[in-house]
Each structure stands twice: as C-alpha cells, then as structure tokens.
Image (cartoon, rainbow over all chains, first blue to last red; front, side):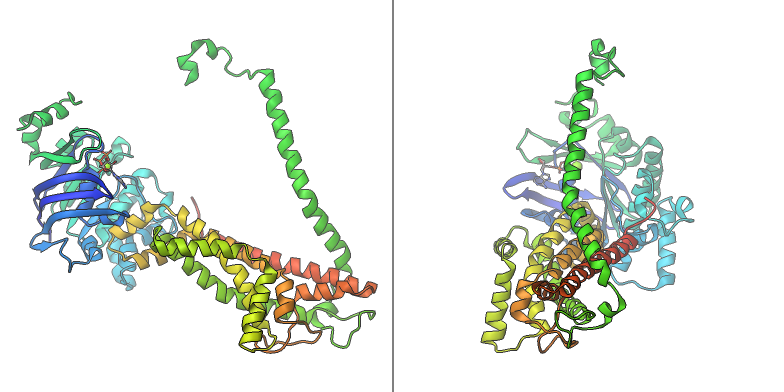
Length: 258
Length: 299
Ligand SMILES: Nc1ncnc2c1ncn2[C@@H]1O[C@H](COP(=O)(O)OP(=O)(O)OP(=O)(O)O)[C@@H](O)[C@H]1O
Ligand SMILES: [Mg+2]
C-alpha cells in the first residue's frame, strides 16, 4: 500500500515570497523520514506541498514535480481532494472537530465522503483507534466530545482520524510539540508501528526524536531572513547524526548553529 | 515573575496599596452604575407594558379579531394580527435566511476579498442603512404599483426580507470568521471537498452564533410598522391567506388601537405590545434551546 514519493525541482511561494527553493528528494515507502532544520526554513511549507495543502492558502503556489509512485500530484488532471485522501496529514496542534463526538471525529473522513454503513463505520473506528493506541482510553465514551480529551489523547485522536481514511502516506508536522514526554513516547511508538504500512514523513525540532524514530533524515536550512529555504542534505539517519556530508548539518546537529 | 526579578518588590506581595484599592472600587462602582443606567429604560418599558397590558391579556384577546368591534367597545382581540405577524415573519425568514446565509458563506469561504466579494460586501453595508420605510416604499413601487399585485401579507414579508438580509449576512459572516482555519484544514487533509467541509464542519461550528444573529433579525423586523402599512395595508378581520388581501399584524394593530382616544382601544394597544414582546421572547427561548442542544456537552 505504501508509496514512494519522488520530488524534483520543487519551489513554493506565498504570493511574492519565495518560501522554498529547488528541492529534490526521494522518500522511501515503509519508512520514516524526518525533516529537521531551523524555524522558518520551510519544513512545514514543503510538507504541505506533498498533499497539495499548500495551495489552500490564498495566493500560495507551487512549481515543480511531486511523483507518488508513477502519478504526478501536480498534473492538471489530478484532483487535489483525491490526493489528500491518499496522503494524510497530522498537524502540530491537535485539532479535533469541536462539534463532533470522539466516534464522529474518527469517522469524519469516511462519513463526509459518503460512507454510511454503520457496521462498516464501527469497524473502522475501532480499528483506527486501536491503531492510534487510543482505543482502551476512550472505548467507554465514544459518544463524548473529542475536545474533552487531554492534549495527547486529542493528538492521537487526530492520528486515528487520519488513518481511518486509509491513506498511503502520512505527513506529520511536529506532532509531539504540544505534548508531554509520555504522550510523546506513545506517539513515537505509534509511528514505529505505523511504518510497516505507511510512508511516514515527520517534521520535528527534537533531534533525539528524529534519531529515535526515523530511518532517513533531511536537513533544511535558510541562508538568511527573506531568503528561500533549501534542502541541505538527506541521508540515512545514522549517517546524518554521526557523519554528515555538509558542515552546516553538523553545526546544526551539534548545536553550533547561527 | 516580577517578584523573582525585582526582589525589593517581593515584600509587597499580598498587600495592595490603598490608592489602587480605591481606584479599583471606584471603577467597579462606575461599571455597576452604568449597568443600572442601561437597565432603567429596559425595566421601565417592561414594567409599563406588563402593567398596562396584563389587564386585557385574556382568552378573548387571543382568539377574537376586531371584526365589528369599534374603538369604544370592550372585548375584541388581536387574533387576526397575531396570525398575520407570524405568517409575515415566517415568510420573510424563509426568504431572507437562506439568501443571507449563502451570501455570508460566499463572502467568507469563497470570496476571499475578490472583486465580487468586495462589491457584495459594499451593497450589504448600503442595505444595512436603508430606513425601514424606504424598504416599504420600494416594495410598494415595485411589487404593488409596477407589477400590479394587490396588498398582501407576502408584500409585507418582502419588505421585511429587505430589512432582514443585511443583519443576518453580517451576523453570519462574523460567526463564520470565528471558525478557526485549522478546522477547515483538518477537514481538507482528510480528503473532504470544500463544500462538504463548509456544510459539515464550518457551519455546525458556527451554528449557535448564527441562530442568535437570525433571532435578533427576526425580533427586529417583527416590530416594524411603517413598511407594513405601505404593503399589506391593514384590516380588522381575520385573513389567514398571506398571498392575497390586506392582513392584520401586531405592529399595525398597536398603531391603529393607540390612535383611538377611547380607553378600551388604548388597553388593547398595550396588550398587543405585550403579546409582541412575549412572542419575541418565546422565539428567543426556543432558539436558545435548539442552539444549546447542538453545542457539544461535557467540555
Ligand atoms: N501563510 C503564510 N503566508 C506567508 N508566508 C508564510 C506563510 N506560512 C509560512 N510562511 C513563510 O514561509 C517560510 C517558511 O515557513 P514554514 O512554516 O514552512 O517554516 P518551518 O520550517 O515549518 O518553521 P517552524 O519550524 O517554525 O515550524 C517562512 O519565512 C514563513 O514566514
Ligand atoms: Mg512548521
């Protein structure tokens, strides 16, 4: 099910602002790829170009090519809505739908796309909550509002919601940055479990986390304020953290940055 | 925090200086005073209306019309006017709310400050400023004189529609703008198309506020008198058909009864006002209950 992503010559803009410049990389299926780099270097922007969420922002546009196996995501015949069903996303801040119960939050993607059969929904909701390691905590209160959970539970609810639509790629933008160490650990475990089925990309500011969960790591950097962000290098995580090719990467990882 | 950075101040922890206490009290007093001042007209209106109107609030008033009752007679009622007002406001809401809500959705979700959105927004502002009598004159000129329809509840409802649309558009717009963008993005990221996102995520999140805005607009037009006099005219008899012929309505009923110098008429006018206030309060209550049910519980 998992798919390989191949990006070539990708630029992203916010109106007149050139946010990321000429990025090319391959993201392997059934593995975790981590994006690291200083704030503002375009990690989130790049991540959002991978499921065509970038263009949701007024004035934002993308140039270049993103291939998902052999399909070009930016081909004119491709429907961005269909892309987002295949490439799911988890955001930095947990954002469950406030008017919906826990059950409805998980079922939202299916229900809003027309799946109505109760038995099928029940099954997928349970599977997804199990998959997100949340089932045991919420199985007795599925009808309660999703906003009533703790932050870490909400984030796992958002992960369950994302896996319920059965995507092939999962993008995570700093999924643990608002969470305590125990919830963080729960989500890292979850990422380890999910990678057998999905292609996973995770943005993180936490080096240890990148080292713990990812197979490959990409380092992004920015030459100065107002400059577009660039990919400095991408390699196996062990190599990036022990013996990177670029001096900038080493400086960043060892904290000698800036 | 400051006690850590400025140790000299740490000593004053717990003791607020007398000057600050006095200022705090004074401002608090002013706020209560302002609140009391604002309540005076409200309480006085309610007091007078209830005091003068309760006398005739009887079964006769609620189920008899004024047909064959002259100003000096006792008895008579506002049945025809209550029916008329409910029908006219219902029709006005049925037309105005969908148009206004869809306009607001366009402005917030699709327009994105484009040229059309700015033009629409400008005209909504212009409409907000239309005096109600002008709305009545407009319907009179277009519907009754140019298109040659007769006086009817519908014509009155059309003029109320013109008054309702801008208020509902503005209220709905504000509520939609309050829905965090993160929720829209969360929905898009699940592969949900934009229109479904709006229908099933954005609107439900904003619904409570939207209902409040709609109720305020309903309450406002329910008391309009001038445009109704021009468009549905006025009758003492029961006319349940809003599509043809003059109809009663509570505001015109009050206006008509209050004109008559006889005490019996004036009593009926007060009771009419009381019934109007009660209907509006009842509608508000119902709307709050509906809105309260929809809001997620157990936060
Ligand atoms: N909605 C937007 N409109 C205009 N410019 C934006 C927008 N979002 C981001 N940018 C700009 O694009 C650049 C890259 O931002 P991005 O959010 O991708 O950085 P990031 O690497 O994710 O940073 P962080 O680690 O702080 O999340 C920044 O210069 C930012 O100011
Ligand atoms: Mg970011």
